[in-house]
Amino acid sequence: MTRQRVAILAVLAATQLMGTVDFSIVTVALPSIGKQFALRPDALQWVVSAYVLMQAGFLLLGGRLCDVLDTKRVFLAALAIFGVASLAGGLAPNALLVFAARGFQGLAGAVLAPGSLALVTAEFETGELRNRALSVFGTVASLGFVLGAIIGGALTGFLGWRSVFFVNLPVVLAISVGTAALLQGKPANRVRPRLDIWGAMVGTAAMLALVGGLSGSSSGLNRVAVLIALAAILLGIFVWVERSSSDALVPLAIFQSRRFTGAILVAALTNLAGLMVPFTLTLVVQHLLGYSPQETGLILVPGGLGGIVGGSVIGLVVHRMGLRAVIVTALIILAIATLPILGPGLHGSAVWVSVGFGVGGIGFIGTSVACTIAATSAVDPGRMGTAGGLLNASQFLGGAIGTALAGVLDTPGTLTAYETCLIAAMAVIVVAAAVSFMAFGPAAPGPAATRQPVSETG
Image 1 (cartoon, rainbow, N blue to C red):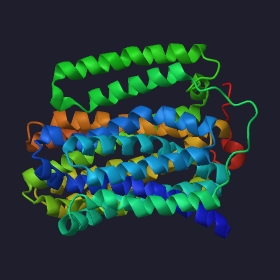
Image 2 (image 1 turned 180 degrees about the horizontal axis):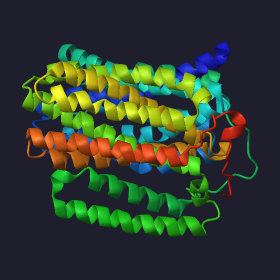
Image 3 (image 1 turned 30 degrees about the horizontal axis):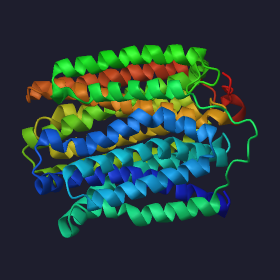
């Protein structure tokens, strides 16, 4: 790998790192933000929900913009929006402006996530080199959650909660300079594809309604049911619009690739189970084992460290072993990781909770990286932004369903309830493994074997 490619990968990986650090760093600062503006928990959650709703809702549109327009310019514009929103959040005089700033950060993230994936796949061709690059992405994502918790606590404690917004500014500036200097823009295209405006409007509305419904279990069952029903109607309209569009936001032919569809499904199921586990463990460690929030964070740190290991290893072995073997193995590791938690962990041992969560991190991030490799190897380069948007959307939806399901199962707050939730997560992982076995062939994903392109016209 040349020095320039290493530098490009470092810039794009820094974007991934910034996103994950920002999410966890703000989460640590939530109590201080709530105290500043006298917010109740049901209002304070909008610091997180505003970000999640906007990012999940606009992922499909963000991914398509990266395909239709110059990816580099779109990426730089999104960085600018993220930087301005971070500045606004740090200066916000009231809670509403904090919520708005987080929403615009999420909007920028809806472009940065698929944009960074499109840029890295444009720079690194399909095969071992791209696998290693995507492995770095998975590794820095895990590192980001660990660093975010540590840095967030230090910044909030010494400089106040506003510093968790201001810290993004020098990072955004550095990434912007690196992007402008190192990456090449697309050559001018005389026949520019039209943006599917109706599809973008309906698809975004459907995603907003679906994620809002799945994330709103505390809002009352009636409101949740209405939002999910609305999402189902909008998704039906979206499919109809896309089938009749000459330049669809999401060409339905993209799902004819068994590898791509399998990657989307496995990513969603893995995130569904993967979010159920930490949600439950936070309650177990604090309510069942009696540890403080600070101690809980330290107990769960091995999950991020395990993710670093999983992300580092996958890029080295997937080209030799093949997607099926790697993903099924990673999912088995994720399932096995729940056993020490279900045994000695739930019965009083925080050490075994840490061990199980650490091993689970290997399987979780390993699966995520392998699914990214699978999805990007099955799509035409002209649709890489769309593929990234769909992949990220599936992960968001899986996580939202998993969090909502865990909230319902864990509500009794008993040992039996926590056991039930963890067993349900294991069952989802088994389903994901079965899907992986059917979707991915036994052959190693070399450049010739993996190319199942979906053209621009579908």
